Length: 311
Image (tube, rainbow, N blue to C red):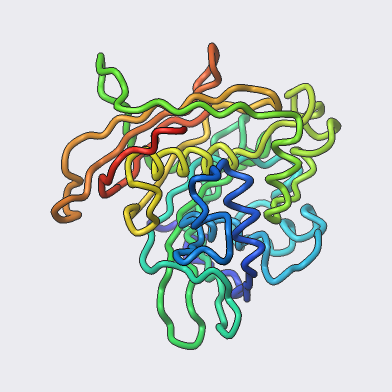
């Protein structure tokens, strides 16, 4: 597909992480004390939670906090209008796992390579930018993860660009109770902990941006809910083993306020098409208890292995 910015490649971003980074990530998305392989660096099977690379495009090689707005606005997209991240929300995220990532990048040269897949004008509501990001060992060329994400730039549309293709939806099966249900109680501190994974958007920490955008104050990162539900799916369906998840995706539908109780409903369906024996298609939604759906279009490919009883 052609269009404004399509195929534009951003400069590769060198990235690095420490064991403490993957420990913090697992703790911040709801890993429990019976999953010490995610939470204790001396565990004989210590592993990084598989979705950890989703934070690396923001982290780079930083060891300290950064100016979110300055970094996000650094590189304009040719052929597209100048967009500001002061009004950006996540649209949808997909990640595919190609190789398990090490618990530390020490001794390796990893980088994020990203390119624009499309810039879509949705009229008055805003503009969508869809991007592919790959985590690659820069020395060997080995591919570890491939992610596709879209950002929705609120109120920044109407510039005459293409509307974009229709997206594929993965609704849960009709009139069928979920196979598993997981609940997670957020707190006023949930986003303040999760942001330490290098997602320092002020929208999730201080009231002013959320008030300006009509949310009435701070909201929790969409990627918190996304990663929290990835943990729920892997724990309840895949035995908490990273090698049992091949892909994971969801669409961001509504904001989450600090203190909301999140409910993840999970349906384990039949064999995932084209994935080989033992791999099942899983669909899920995340909703606020008694309220709106916050993640829709949830789909994962998982090898079923036991059930975690304590979630």
